[in-house]
Amino acid sequence: MKNRSFWDGLAMGTAAGLMLSMVMLMTRRREMSPMERTRMVVGRTARQAARRARGVLSDMAGRFSG
Image (cartoon, rainbow, N blue to C red):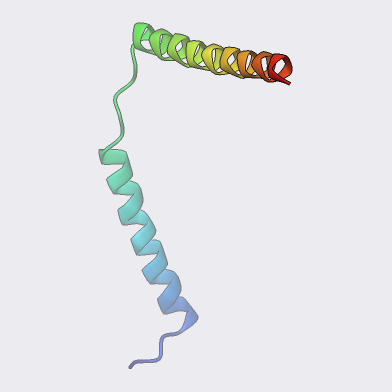
């Protein structure tokens, strides 16, 4: 096995990083439209509200069952 120096490792890491960044740039998602963004935010808010309501209901049920 060949002994690699620090500079060899740095060059290989730089090359790998450049290739990875190019792949990520090429596969970048398209920009979302305002309607899609709004739909995503509303969906997330609704899921959070449902999760909180479930927690409150289970707390109330726990209080009354004891």
